[in-house]
Length: 438
Image (tube, rainbow, N blue to C red; front, side, top):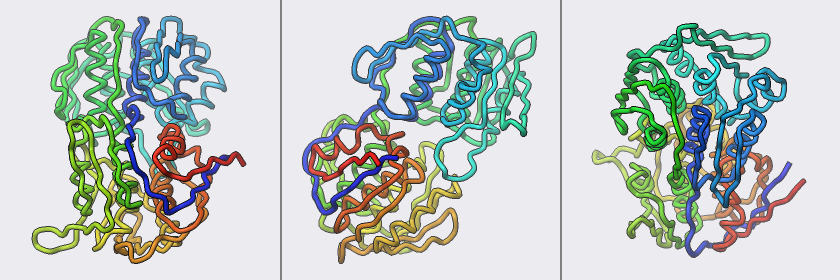
């Protein structure tokens, strides 16, 4: 198990560029299974979750070529149907949360699919109902085998058929799975309460390049008219908005001056404003964000003077993936804020590590934490920690970079799942992070 050893108290200075969006990458990679033609994807982050999914594809028989840094081509013309029933397939998919999005494409290609209960972050129960109910509405038959922790899904002999559906939640991966399946389904599928994140918009644009017919992109009402087949495409991923937010919080916590390059400002939504609510000055310079040095930053109050409340919500609301970063950034602000994590009941449990470092945090319940900022009256203390998930891991790294002394973060494989070469990239602008192979 690897760990990071972080020497705190060093300011960052210079430019840093976010890599391709992890969440978009997993969606568009799964879409390459819908066609037997070549699909080329640019700006892929070479992180564990992406590389593990690509390796799964290789084992499935997909022709994969690593053309250059972040550029891969995929051709799924000779998929090995027998491998999909193998122990190796079950083991690989069980360890990767994003593997749930291969269900729809495999259902289209073979008329059936199996999937072990997928893994991923330990942030509480993450139900898959939206995926399965959506596919059932298209005519698929779903079965859960509890003794094997296995999902089986099959299409009827007459094939899947388009329909109208109202999703019970605006699930991003659920929407992606249903959209991919509907592109090769007879008739028209209408999805209301669809997720409309930039990742979904990007997926739809790539599918249209491949020959799909999709209307309503960017809204929560999508209409997909099925086609008989899909072809080739070349697609470029957006920069990762979660990396952008992480770098903003990092700069503020460490009193650093950095420029975050090529962030695709229109696709950040309200993320910059969420950090501005914490008192952080963010200057837009073209498609870059400049974060000046902050010796102090003051949390805003609502207009009536009540305590600021920052919570997650479906797009265009605030992504839940940044609440951990906002929480740790608030620990050195002046003032107080309530962080309300609505979607996952275990995502805030890492705050005990921050409390041990001297942060003033009250964990109200599994979903809410009140942060009383210490306004740089003292630095956080060093600590030894273990990362339970990607986003808690990056929050711990930010805390350690701002702390006095040397901290250690173990289980950094979780961080590597979402941030490519984060230690090397941060060290290049002034951080002191050493990777230790235990």
